[in-house]
Length: 426
Image 1: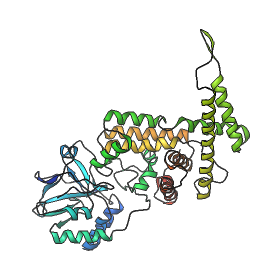
Image 2 (image 1 turned 180 degrees about the vertical axis):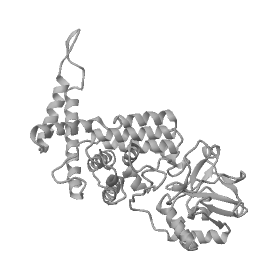
Image 3 (image 1 turned 60 degrees about the vertical axis):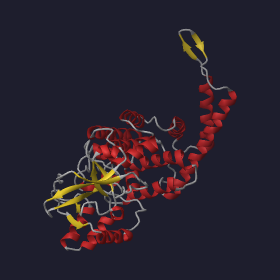
C-alpha cells in the first residue's frame, strides 16, 4: 500500500498496514445528519442503493486515523480496527462532518475513495468501514474486485471546480461571535470546498495542513504560528502603503462629499509624502529634521505610490463591472485581507496541532470583532479582501487569483445558507 494522495500532493513515503486492536467509534449524531453528505448516505442506505452510496463517497473527502509519530516521520499506514458489527478487521474512514474534535494523537489523513482503491493491497485490512457507529455507517469488502468498483465510481465523480457554500448543520456555530469570525474566512472555504463553520478543524488532514503552513507561510513551529496570527490580527502583514493611500482617499471623500478624482488623489498623496519627508521634529535638544530618503529616492517612492493608485483604480473599475462594487463606490480598506487570513490561519494552526481549540476560537472571535471596526458590511469586507489578494498576487492579470475569489463572492452573496446572508455583519 502506498500513501493515499492528499489534494495537490504526491507523497511516496514508505508505508504498510498496522494492527492496533479495537478502536473507538464516533458517537452517532443526534437528530439531523451533520451535513448534506451524511443525509445523502443515509438516503442511499435506506434504499439499499449501494451504488448511490458509493457515488456519494466518491464525491466527498474521506479521512482515516494515523499515529502522529508516523505522520511526523512522513509515513502512512492503514490502521486495522476490529469492528464487532461484522466480526472483522477494517480500515475505518470518516466523512469530514463525522470527524471527532482534533486531539494530539492520533491525527487524521486524507484519502479519497479513488486513491484508496488504487493503493489497497492484500496486506491491508479486508474491510472498509464508513462512519461506523452512526446512522449512515456501511461496510464494504476490500477485495481487488471491490476496489475496481470503487475506482469506477471515483472515475464518474464530478469535478469539484466551482465554489460551494458548505455548512455543518450540527457540530458548528451558526450565529454569535465565533460564527462571525469563522465567516471572515468564508471566501477561502467556498473556494476550497470546506465547511465554513467547522470549529473541529482537520482541513485536508494533519500532514497536508502541516505542509500547507510550511510551504506557503514558512510556519513549522507553534511560536511562528502565534507570531503570524498576531500580525494578521493587528493587520500588520499586508503593505502599510496600501492602507496609507486608501486612508488618504477616505479622508478626501469625507472632505469633498464622496467622490474623489484620481488625479486629485495622486496629488494629495504626493504632497503628504513630501511634507512628511521634510517635517521638522521638536525635541528637548531643539529642532531637528528626521533622516529619510534623499530627493531622488523620495521622488521614486512617490511615483511608485502613484502607480499603486492607478492599479487600485483599475481593479475597482473591474470590480464594478463584475458586481463586486456598486457603481460609484470604492474600496475603503484592505484590512479584510489580513483578517480573513487570520480566520483561516487560526484553523490551519489547529489542523496542524500548533494550537488548542480554545486558542483557535479566541483568534477567530478577534478576527470577527476587528472586522466590524474596519469594514461596514460583508460586501465591503469582500471587496477589501479581494483587492488585497489581487495587489499581493495578481499583477493585473485578472487570472485565477481574482477569478476564484469573484466566483466565491458571488456564491456567498447568493446562496441562502451562506453566512454572509444569515449572519449580520454588525
